[in-house]
Image (cartoon, rainbow, N blue to C red; front, side, top):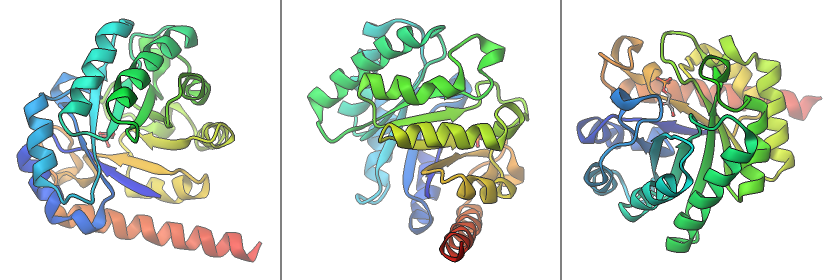
Length: 250
Ligand SMILES: O=C[C@H](O)COP(=O)(O)O
């Protein structure tokens, strides 16, 4: 299971760099512009320069509208700025067809620039609250568009969490569908360390967090701290080991 951490800017990215051995992907976003709020190109560049070269930098393109051309151009901006993981929040897409159209544009824009870029189609666990595509449709949207991963996050950061909206068994179905399509499955949404057992059990590939590694568990007022990243990672690795041991016995 890979750990993706979302700093809100260069200062927090420097703290992520101090904990680099404990994380796998540094995810640039601007939380005050939304769940998958996009940050400035120069911030992506500065963060790319600040974190060790062997750690991929991801960038969110935003909680995007159904405007395929606009989104493709924004995604290219993130890639040109140094991100190799490009995450798109399909906020304004009401149907799978709209979402596939948006993601096809992103995949083409990004992979024409850099063939090894990794494109993540993200939906929302609380899609019912914003009227966008159903969480379980994401793996097929990602597959049809040529994306590399399907993801869920929460759109509204009001203290409700991934499992409040999509229970573990439905998340397990999400992961199964992604794997059946040959994609990675990424899950986020106010995930806490107490969720890691379930996330390991259902074979999540990437876990995305911010709040859980911020002071006081608060993604808005707290700041990411290296010791919290290390502790979260230790817990994650423990669950992965336990799951592997249990699977080997059965
Ligand atoms: O991509 C991951 C998100 O930033 C998750 O943030 P959160 O854990 O505060 O919900």
